[in-house]
Image 1 (tube, helix red, strand yellow):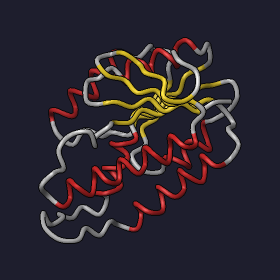
Image 2: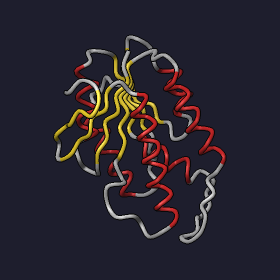
Image 3: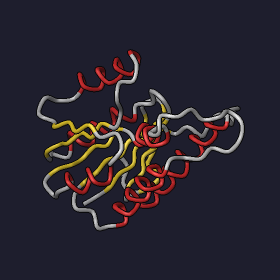
Image 4: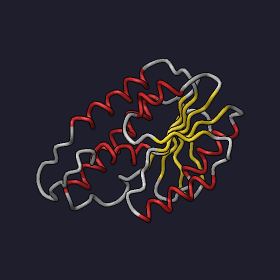
Length: 186
């Protein structure tokens, strides 16, 4: 069984590549959507992703308990596509429904540490099925001015490093072109 991380910038083609990998696996596909429609723009993005997916793919929406969901869904005869880790991270960061200061220390809610640790623990277990994770690369630009934005960029970078270290294959996507950083190319 294998684990793949597909990451890249916004509109880089990472989700399309992950969907292609899932489709070409020949296995039953379960799509784990980590986003929720908080506003009209996000609702439109979600609708666009839904329209692209084949009708036979099962969709599971899970905004927080990702490791528990993977433990339940991952079996040898299927591939699970998780789109995306950075939205999941954002869900955890803002799960307490409070505003963060733009200056000063950011204290993340306890669920952030628990769920992140649970996902990494799950990744340390033997792979019970194939998984493709999609994530955003948000650390290649300028350092954000606000504390909450810097915290998000830092945490996303740390998560991508941790997940990449535990995956057999890591693909970076730019302009729709995948670059194999670890494991087999596409």
